[in-house]
Length: 113
Image 1 (spheres, rainbow, N blue to C red):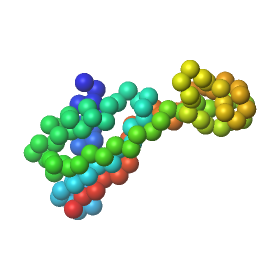
Image 2: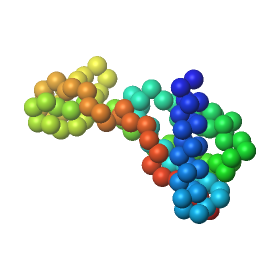
Image 3: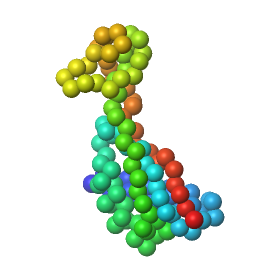
């Protein structure tokens, strides 16, 4: 259900941004959602469609750019996507640690007319 509240936040931000640009219709919202963010792009889109009714965001397309979760090597500092059941850095073999990459959920851009 946290996707519903996030959809409301997205609508509020998009309306504010469109009005600041002198636009009266939001046509597309581009989101970045990390696979470890706890958010589902499909669920956000579903809640967005319902919550946007009667706003300048009604009918806007939601586009999600997924971001893979990455580990960081504490030795060589490289970021890498872990393989199933393997946490070793492919560059030096040190066990990777969690990074912030893949945990994000943000609005990348808004298109309006």
